[in-house]
Length: 255
Image (cartoon, rainbow, N blue to C red; front, top):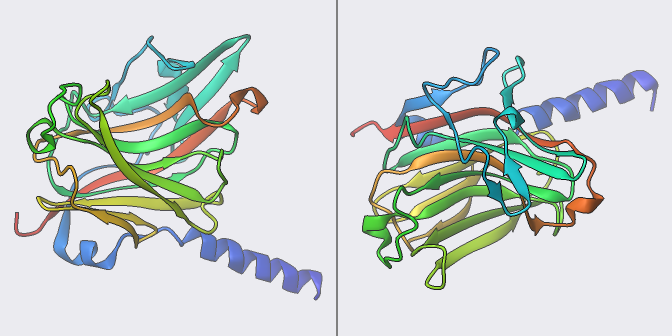
C-alpha cells in the first residue's frame, strides 16, 4: 500500500470514528430540545452550572473549582490532578439552576486515560440521603454513564442508587463492553419515563430497567473522581481528564 493510500485510509477511519457518536432516531423524531450547553466560549456558564462540593474531600480527592474549565475549543474539561501529595478533582452540577423530571438526557464526551480516576454523567435527587425505600418520592441516583479503566478500557457502567448511602443503601446496575470506547467522542443517553429507564451509548440501547424509578425533579452532575474504584491511582500520570462536548435535555413533543 502506498503512503498516499495509507493516509487516505487513516483519514476515513478517523472520520468514521468522529461521527460515531449519535442520538437515537426516535428521540430526534419525538422529542424537542429543552435545555442544553454546548460549552462554547471561554468560561463555564454559571447561569447553567454551579461548582459542587468545593473544598470537600471525596474519598482520595479534594474538590477544587479550577479542575473544571472550558478550553475555548467547545469542550468542558474536568481534571484529576496531583500536586506533591495532594490529589484534586472537579465536578459541576445544576442543583442550583435546573432540576427536572422525565425526558431524554444526553452528553457527548471523550474518556479519561489513566488508572485511578473515574468519570461520570449522572442525575441526583435532592433527597437521596434520606433512608426511605421509596425512590418514586425520594428519588434515585441515576448514573447515565460511569467510566474507568480498572477492568478494561472499553467498558461503560450504568448504575442506580437509592435509600440513602448508609447501611440501608440499595443499588443495581450493569457493565457493557463498547468497542472503541476509549477512543474519540461517544454519546451517552438516558430515556427516563414514569415506568422505566433506558440507557444508550452511541445511539444504541445498552440497558433497560423498571427498578427504582424516580418521579421527582433531579439535577445533573458532571464529574471526575478519585475513589479507588477506578484502579491504582499511584500508577497514574496526572493530570488526567474527561472532555464534555455538550449536555442536552429533551422533552417529549406532546409535553
